[in-house]
Image 1 (cartoon, chains in turn green, purple):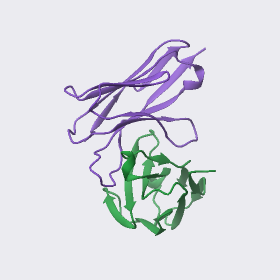
Image 2 (cartoon, rainbow over the protein chains, first blue to last red):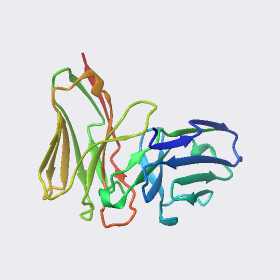
Image 3 (cartoon, rainbow over the protein chains, first blue to last red):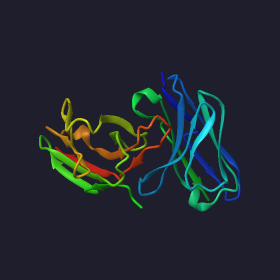
Image 4 (cartoon, rainbow over the protein chains, first blue to last red):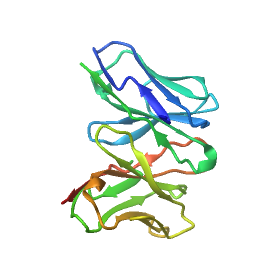
Length: 113
Length: 114
């Protein structure tokens, strides 16, 4: 059983397109996150959602928007894709009582041409 | 501003040796310090974590040493094995009850030579 899953695993698209990445967790966690890992492998928080409420929004362009249809899902929508958006995007989840013990998905490698 | 500094960037250790990775943090509000292991093409996986009320935590071959006054913590991998070859990330978060994201170090690429 996959705890945190993401689709697709690979996404190749042209500049200017709009795309979405889906994330689902079956751990019963309250909080979900999106992280970006750049070409140098640096991981940085983008968003977190707690009980359908956006808690953190770091300095991320407003072309990126998280959408949570329910507690088990947090999808990432990206509009007007740019070359610099190429990266690996990871979804994660945690339960607040577990000291922010976060479980990561397998990642989605986004390539913008 | 990089709030968690990690070193070295890369590390080569012989099989059976001890691998040591160091991290330093700046934000005194951080109170949970996990280490993640990442293999190529995979997501980061939680390896071991520590809170500042203890100075050391050991799980199998993995040990975290924590120095609160110096705002430093380190990961020691004893009897390093080729299967330990991966990228290791230290991280920190303020466990204030909110949904804080992890602040990561820049990672250490560890290679264990047979």
